[in-house]
Image (cartoon, rainbow, N blue to C red; front, top):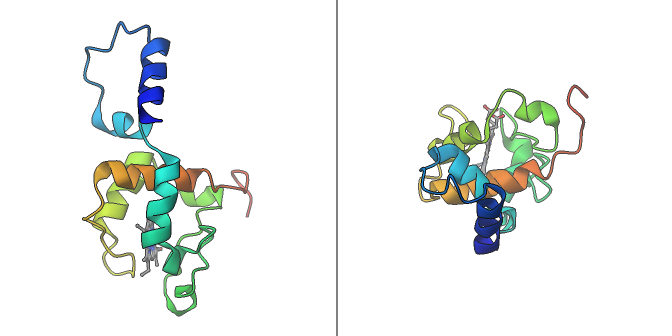
Length: 126
Ligand code: HEC
């Protein structure tokens, strides 16, 4: 899958720019694997953010602030994938969003790629 994606990207870019090192965040985003991200999410994040990524995990009712509902486009407003990846790995002090430093940048990018597939509300919807 990763190889196929890389080969496709190489084809699309004509191979001409293959020698240039791409900037790190976009490299992580381009090679992100949402399928792998789903598995990592299920293992690490569902207790709070819920199996559907809607912020309704079993622990959510006890938490203030509530876990983010990733199905809402508003939750993503103004956030790049790189922002989200950094936040997952560093956590958010003062909230129950703990740091996940054991997840590599690539693994966090995979999770963020899967979370993006969960958005169901159009931008601007309540
Ligand atoms: C113990 C509960 C808990 C777990 C486990 C947890 N989170 Fe969170 N997470 C939260 C809470 C609560 C917030 C909301 C913090 C806030 O509103 O400032 C949050 C916020 C976030 C945000 C920021 C969203 C935003 O809009 O700023 C991201 C991204 C995120 N979580 C991803 C993850 C991922 C990925 C995992 C698994 C690797 C995970 N979280 C595991 C509780 C949790």
